[in-house]
Image (cartoon, rainbow, N blue to C red; front, side, top):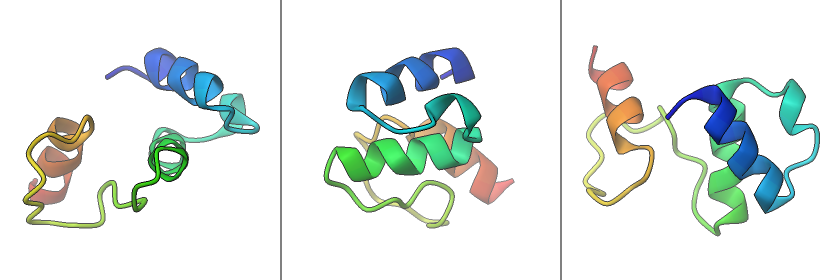
Length: 63
């Protein structure tokens, strides 16, 4: 997902200062707003297959 789309999603969730946050911080904020743990890029062998961020998250932690 590109940064513009992530910023729009963060805006829709009511994340404050969304335009100033880095991609990783935006995703963490969105995960928290959704009621999930802010785990993006923190788990190397994630077993959650239906996560919206899985593709970006797992390719960067395994690379």
